[in-house]
Image 1 (cartoon, rainbow, N blue to C red):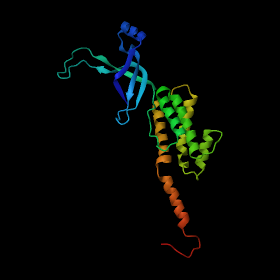
Image 2 (image 1 turned 60 degrees about the horizontal axis):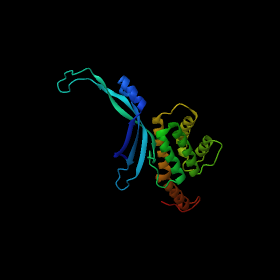
Image 3 (image 1 turned 90 degrees about the horizontal axis):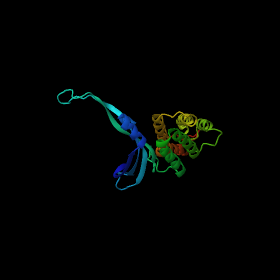
Length: 235
């Protein structure tokens, strides 16, 4: 998604502009923006709206020297740049790869977390926890009193081909619990790491061929393995 330069709306808040006029300090300036986004894939052309807030932050130090001669031209000053914070995106931007064959309920849940990622990190972490609950439904883990009990059930059920994923689900559960039960904002980096763990699990469930090959192997072995006490030895 790229910004349509012909359809941009920015403004500086009046109060912050008055404060800047009094102090001359650029970091006092804050504002808001609304941009039209267009997919850069010409075959798609999907459009959306992004809105948010802006502020000015320090961006290094201008040493005041001539880069060619090394002569000091003026006392060095701070440099500044604009910083943009997203408050809302009208269409969910996929933060991980969604398997093409994932069911609609799971898709809607993970896409809702993508929207919350820009708005409320803790709510996003909680939605990821809910996604794990729905994923356990999909892979056939029975209902239980808590999410932890369901994951324990999966871990001990070696007949479920996805039981090795229990340790990944446990990590997401811990993270989701913290997201839900603390007022302090969770780290965005930890949220990104959680998405990476989920993407790995989805590849194991939807994309890898391991389960299919395991099933075929078991079927072949059951059908053609020589029976005990058989006098026929296969070489």
